[in-house]
Structure formats: C-alpha cells, structure tokens
Length: 432
Ligand SMILES: [Zn+2]
Ligand SMILES: [Zn+2]
Ligand SMILES: [Zn+2]
Image 1 (cartoon, helix red, strand yellow):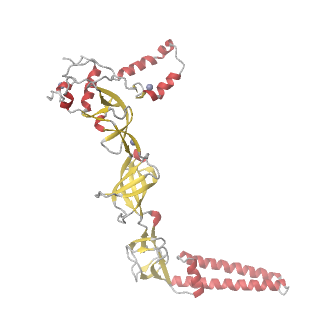
Image 2: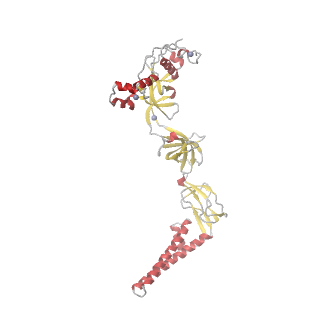
Image 3: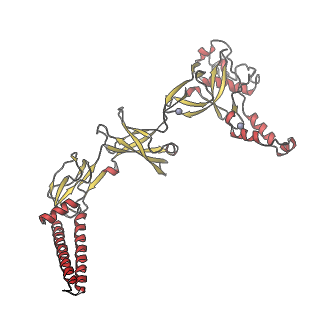
C-alpha cells in the first residue's frame, strides 16, 4: 500500500481520495441526548408531554436550537472500500462478537500486615526482672502459655495483701453470723449486728481491691484460687500469651530489668493476615465488604493469597488521592509476611456473561463510541455502542449495540473512521 503525503494509505486519505455519496445509517442511537434511543429518558419524557403549539415552540426558540444541535453531529454512513481486496491490503481484520464469561476486577498496590485483631503486644504490667524467658521468635504458642517469668517484689506484696484480705472477709463473715444469732436471742443489742454488717462490707471492699490488683497483673480466677489455697506469696509473675499465635517479636532477655510497660513479646496469629490496598477514589467506590481479593507478593507469579474485603476506607488521602481498603487473607502456606509489598486484585462484581470486543475495535466518534460491522457486500456499517472497561486491558465489554455473531472490525478500524470523517465533510468537497 502506498502511503500518501498525509501519512495514510492513499486510497483512504480524506484529502487525497475521492468522495463518495454518503449512505446514511440508522443505528438506534439518540444523537441529541447521546444514548440508545429506545431507552433515552429525555426522548421518552418528550413523547408523553402535551404537544406544543407550533407558534409557541417557535417563540421559545427551542426547535431551532435542537435543529442546530443535531446538525453538529456528523451523520453515520456505510463505508465502502474502493476495490475488493483492499481490506486485506490495509490490514482490516474482522472477528465475530462473542460472549464470554468473566468477572470485573480492580487492581491496587497493597501491603501485607498483621491482623490487628489477632495481634498482641505482651508487657509485664509490673516492674521487676525477667527471671526466665521461655520462648523464641517463631515459636507457636497457645493462649495462656507462659512466655516469661518476672521477679517483682510488688507481686509478692500484692499476693500477700490478697491473702490477708480474704482472711479478713472470712473472719468478718463468721463474726457477723455469730452476732446475728446472739442478737436474735436478745443476748446482744441490735447495734452490734449493724457493726458486724459494716465490718463485712468493709472487708469485702478490701478483698475486691486486692483481687483487682492481681487481675491487673494478669491473674485470672484459677490463679487467684491457687494463690488463696496455697498461700503463695512468691514474687514471681507469669507473663502469658493472650492469644494463640506465633511469637513474632521477642525482646525479653533473662536477667534484664523491665518496666511495667516494656514490650517483651509480640504474638500474632499469622494464619489470617491483612492487606492494606490503595485504590483511586473512583475504583474505591466500586468496592464493597465481602468481595473476593487476591494478593500477589511483588516479584512472584504464584497463585497469591485469597481473601475478602473486610473494610472500605471512609476518607481519601489528601496527598495521594487514594482510599484504603482492607482485606483479610488466608496465609495458606504461612509464607506471607507482614509489610510485604504486592498487588491486590479485587473482584467487584459476580461473574457474568456478556460481549467482549478488542479495544482496537472501538473508535471515539462525535461524543460516542462505535464499532464497524462487516456487511455481506464487503461494506462496513458503523454502529454506536455502549461500553464499559473489562478486567483484561485488551478488551472492552459492550453493553449495548452489538449482538453475538456480528462481525466486527478488530484491527485498523481507525482507517474506517477516517473514511467516516471524510463522508461527514460532504461528498465531493475534498475533491481537488
Ligand atoms: Zn493524503
Ligand atoms: Zn434522546
Ligand atoms: Zn462484564
């Protein structure tokens, strides 16, 4: 094919070529409102309106305005090639529009993180010395398992206070019981009973204080019972894991002094990890809780880690203009690590079947998009279509304007568009 001075196949160039008489096409498109005619709400509304009197219409100038608007749009016409065989020469290829089962996915940069609801930092809650450290980083631990033993005089005194308080309650209750009996027999005046009741209440309050102090150190009911029964006043405190998981941080060193708030360990349940996903505002608006997610670690082509969206951010980052989305991922092989970078693919809709055509088949034309349909006589009929992006970047989904089996020009359709533009300029006016 010879290329003309305008950089196009010579027989296609609107400036070099000869004009054709336009063969106008009706494709069911409302040009006035730029959407499918059958469902155009403005046209429907107009049809049900009271017919206006012609004079009134003229005065408002509405009719004239619309006529002008319509005239702005270049009409569509059948495109005929000058010679048979030219299509092959200039590289026009066609393929039947076919339906495909597919899902719509969004992609965003993502970072793996520990699941914050299954992550715990472990602190001694009391100042003292680390007497013993029982676990290493990487160890699997169960909830309640002893991670370290802290030696703290404060623990001993708290236990002693608790044992004393428990004894005081027992004594006050016994006194109260005896006093009640004696008062009932009139062996004691009534005010003695009142005093005994006050003593019981006071001792119980003291026991609650002492008990709370031990609970604050992490002692639960079984340990409290054991302390009472064995009269244990040792200064040792077990530091236990609050959850099932893996020791991911171990800072405790035997023999070192610790403060109440010193982090000794972090335990994480790494079987369910989080991914923080950054999405554009537009993409984020399509994401909802429960949608399937696949996280792929950067630099790997593995199957990735499957999960679900658990939270969609409520704000846009003013710097990056992105919104954060959180997903929960099954760490099926245990190899997903916190802070790993990767990409996340979110399936934003259920799988469905519809027509997909190559992106190269679709051309922008006069505010709308169109494809060219190959006719049996070798000509091409432009057809406006409604499209939406598909997950694969090489295709678009056609939601209106195309039927399965229709033959669509899939390559070099811009050459046909060029021809359409020439026709639109008016036959003959480009003849030199
Ligand atoms: Zn030219
Ligand atoms: Zn309309
Ligand atoms: Zn679709």
